[in-house]
Amino acid sequence: MRISRYLLILAAFLIMISSVLSLFHGGDRTAVYVNIAAMASIAIAVSITSFKNPNKRNL
Image (cartoon, rainbow, N blue to C red; front, side):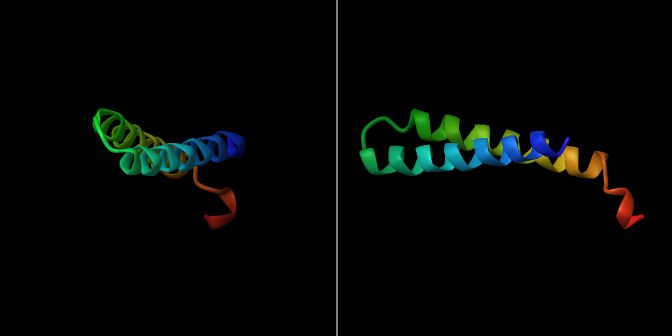
């Protein structure tokens, strides 16, 4: 489960970098909006996985 969290965080980071590069490029902004929506969905997925399976040490 820990690997999936790291992969989701890595994907969000790469999408964020892609969004910044798209913003500086100029022109059509559709890719930026798609990247922002993808980041939001990844953030929701990370929060669901972290709240659904809390560490047993914290209990």
